[in-house]
Structure formats: C-alpha cells, structure tokens
Image (cartoon, one colour):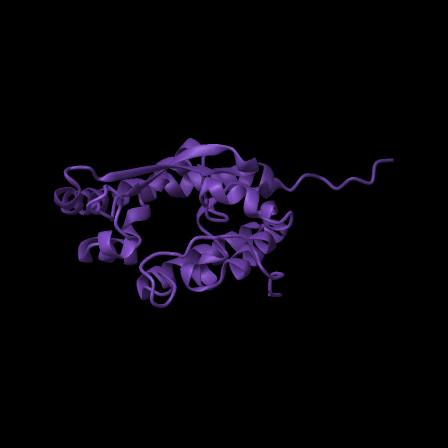
Amino acid sequence: MSTSQPPDWYRTWGKRSLDVLLALPVALLTLPLLLLAAAALAPQNGGRVLFRQLRPGRAGVLFPLYKLQTMTNARDAHGQLLPDADRLTRLGRAVRASSLDELPQLWNVLRGDLSLIGPRPLLPQYLPLYSPEQARRHEVLPGITGWAQVNGRNAISWEQKFCYDVWYVDNLSLGLDLRILLRTVRRVLGVRGISAPGQATTEAFRGSASPPPSL
C-alpha cells in the first residue's frame, strides 16, 4: 500500500484560483489609479510609461515582468545610465513608495507568470549566484508580494530575504497567503521598508558570503 501523501489542494489548484479571483477585480478597481500614475510619469520618460524586464519564474524560466517606469533614462557624457538615485525623480519615488508601480504586474498574475504571493522575481544574472538552498525559492511561482516583503522588504539583507523565501516555500498555505495579503496592505499604507537605509534602490546581490541567518 502506498504511503505517499495526497496532493495539497491549495498548491495544486487553490492558489491559482485565488490569484485569478482576486487579481481581476483588483486590476479593474485600480485601473483609474494606474492610468493616473502613468499619465503623471509619461512626461519625465518621453511618453514611455511601462518598464519591461525579463525575470526568472518557477524553475528559473524567464518571463517578461511589467512595472510602471519610475526612473528616467538620463545618461552621462559617455552614454552610460546615471546611478539609480540620480534617475529616480521625486514623482517616481512617490509612485514606488505607494507601490503603484507594481500594478501592471496584475497582468502577469492573470497570465500565470506570477502569483499574488510568492518570492519576488529577481534579476536573471543572480541565478548562478544562489546556493542550492537559496535556489529553492524557484520551486513556486514568484509573487507581487511575499513573506520577505512583509518582514522588511528591501531594508533587510539578501541572506535574510532568501531565508524568508525558502521558509515560505516549505510552509505555503491558504492561511499564510491571507496573512501576507493583510500585512502587505498595512505595510503599503505605512510605506515602510521601501529601500535599504541610505539607498534609493536595493543593492545588487553578489552572492552569499556567509550562511543565512535563522528565522
């Protein structure tokens, strides 16, 4: 007689159902805010309002992720992009702080690229830098928000962030996702942990120099 456990209903189909049931009405309700933010950002970006970038999803498969473009494409005399802090305008900073720049990712959720809840999709160049344990964050769909985001977002170390991500993979459940959603709303309203202290954006990940901290 087989001793295998029955499949987790939430992992197999419940989570995807929740994504669609929540993402569609939220996308419709927030469409006026999205259009207003896009119209405000357009002049500083030469009319371009969407930022598109390939990010790794489940199993590391790349997909196009969409956000509002909050940084200009200002360059120096040699044609190189200026540092993020110099390209992030006051308006762009406000849009990022309110998380309005994340709204186009609801389209990614409806497409099935993203979940509402999961480890944040990072840059493709980080893939070879992960330890085997850190790479487990790709066992589930990435998300717009996640356990790491409601426990510090960009104001915590990479090691701590990956520790939270893997913990989420191992403990994924309906109750945990609802808890994260509620905490996300509180953090967005409180505008906390948008970036690390003294930085406009997150510092690049260059690989782990030490073992991850315990939760």
